[in-house]
Amino acid sequence: MARRSAKKKSKARPRNAANGALMGMAHMLRRVRWWLLRGLAIVFVLSVVWVLLYRVIPPPGGIYIAQEHRRIGEIQRQWVPMDRIAPVMARSVIAAEDANFCLHWGFDMAEIRKVIAAGSTRGASTLSQQTAKNVFLWHGRDWSRKALESGFTLLIEVLWPKSRILEIYLNVAEFDEGVFGVEAAAQHYFRVSATNLTPTQAARLAAVLPAPKSRNAANPSDFLRRRTASIMDGAATIAQDGRADCISG
Image (cartoon, rainbow, N blue to C red; front, side, top):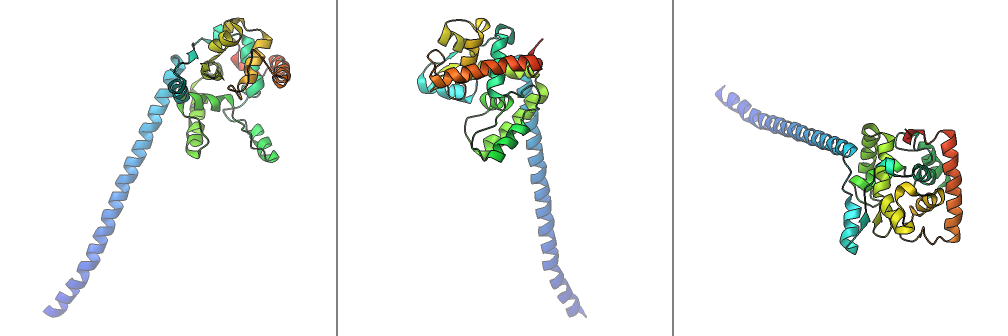
């Protein structure tokens, strides 16, 4: 009888050891999951605080502006509040870059569907997405940046009014090599302040945004002149049909 009991005990030990190992692994996985969720929560809270901070203070710039400053040695940039930017400049940028800016929640799904249906390689980034990229992230096409851009886009749409999104965009957008923000651009190209931009000047500045290093608002090509005329028409249209109402008042 004693021998049988010893045999039973010897068989039970490996089984108990295996169960203990599994329990230990499960406990470790729970701890890892807890720390991971905690880390994600901390990152989310810090991101919210970061975005809220820029609702009330001007962003110092962004990674790309810092890179360009390091590369060329000097940049032109001067922050101006929205009430010191000609209203036609705001409408021109909306007409040129994101005609449904006041209507969408950060992503223009109708425009995205058009791009997909056409099999086009052009982007469908909204002004909100571009602002998120310029202020919080780096330039590039990798999926990690696009995922972060989507997250920050949703945050700024929730935590900033549309007028603040556009105000910040106009103060960080690149208009020429080393020229950032509409005030620096107005002085660089036309020797005027942003508040005194004419409809033609505003449309020209908006027209250079997709390719600021190769387009010149002061010496426009035939293409840029045609694009300027189109933007002027668009700016007048959105002023009449209400698509610029979110930035007025």
